[in-house]
Amino acid sequence: MGVNERYTQWKTLVPVLYDWLANHNLVWPSLSCRWGPQLEQATYKNRQRLYLSEQTDGSVPNTLVIANCEVVKPRVAAAEHISQFNEEARSPFVKKYKTIIHPGEVNRIRELPQNTNIVATHTDSPDVLIWDVDSQPNRHAVLGATESCPDLILTGHKDNAEFALAMCPTEPFVLSGGKDKSVVLWSIQDHISTLAAGPGLSKSPGSGGFTNKSASKAIGGNDKRTKSPSIGPRDVYQGHADTVEDVQFCPSSAQEFCSVGDDSCLVLWDARAGCTPVVKVEKAHDADLHCVDWNPHDVNLILTGSADNSVHLFDRRNLNPGGVGAPVHKFEGHSAAVLCVQWSPDKSSVFGTSAEDGILNIWDYEKEMICEMAWHGVFSANGLKNDVVPLMGLVTINGLGWYDSDDDGTIRIVQSDFSVKLSCLRLVEKQGSTGLKVPTAPPGLFFRHAGHRDKVVDFHWNASDPWTVVSVSDDDESTGGGGTLQIWRMIDMIHRDEEDVLAELENFKSHILACERS
Image (cartoon, rainbow, N blue to C red; front, side, top):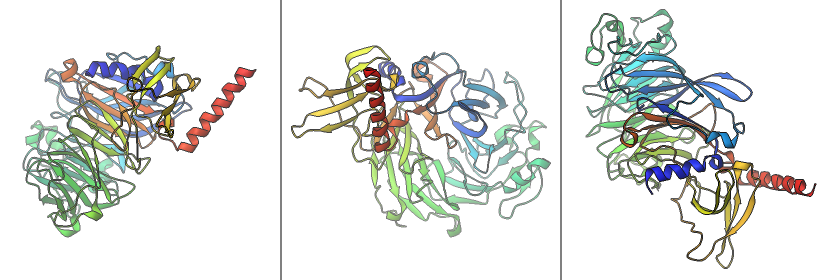
């Protein structure tokens, strides 16, 4: 199936699969997207900060964009409205609030958990740039405009550090990896505490302290930019044999972290044990590793994604210092390199993965058997009638539909058309070899977001609004430029407990029957 055909089928099923979706066309590609702080709560929607970037062709400056997003609350949006969007238009739910003219491309954005108004960015340089988005002035991005001045510059890499970047959830620490094969750790505690008084000269033990030198290699040398203070690393960690592509802190400890790289290795570090690896898993995948994430609910579980199109789940209790230890699960649901993995903040066994195939998959490693179904039936919201419809989402026992098997092997599927609030409940029987096909899906895969038409370079779960995701694709190859930002939430019947879903369906069925009798 081609990309355009897949996208067309996905769009017809948006009212069935999604509780809410906003599609926002980007003039320039964004390589990163992150949720910021929630700003306001209202009856039907919340307002929240959103960070993204503009990777330009040089005709205008590259920018770090701070946007305000209206996040519609669950079960508020009308199903017939959420699919009525124009791919070439900007969403009314996303409004640009502030623009920072960034020194070079913005390859990665990460927010500080202790203060999400402070973000770190990676560009094509050895340095990490720290920004206080509230204090930064709003800039007009025109050719020749002066670059914005970072609030802090983190030095320590010997070569470009473009993608590997993490902020510690327990302390104001920053972690980075780069082409110099090293992992670098900083503390920005002094910067956080002295921000209100402006750039200071105080020194944090082991942090390298603030200085008045500029990082001229990264951002040039006009008078304003040289005022950015810089800070040296606490430590530099050596153990990789190639570029470090991603890093992540242990959710419960600022002293423990992990990294992955183009040497196909997963490396675990402990700052208390020195600057060499505690555990080094050789050949964690069959190709370069692009991404890693540490489970915030179970600190023994680590996810990795690779250019071999797969995702591996490691249990660190099964690893030893010699690097021996196979993944406890392998997830294969992509047809191209995996670019991003992230655990859900809401449920410990759920995670998302995005890849160069334009797909964002949602998995639950506790699911024993998931089935991707082609449904035969009536979809009144999109006009499809008596057709076999490949469902771009994946349906579980507690999802939009469910199935069971009789002794004779017949599969019966109860179909629910959520686009009309479950007004149509039908029983469909599997026919012979020429009838309804029910192909199996990779174990653990229960939802597939197919709203992007090119590689999904980043996504982020919304910790303030469970099951809401922002994702961004670089559409240069499919449309000749620009990108697509989507904010979406699957219908809750897909991920809720089975008993709750069945009870709701039964109540609705009773209501429909009562209406028919009256």
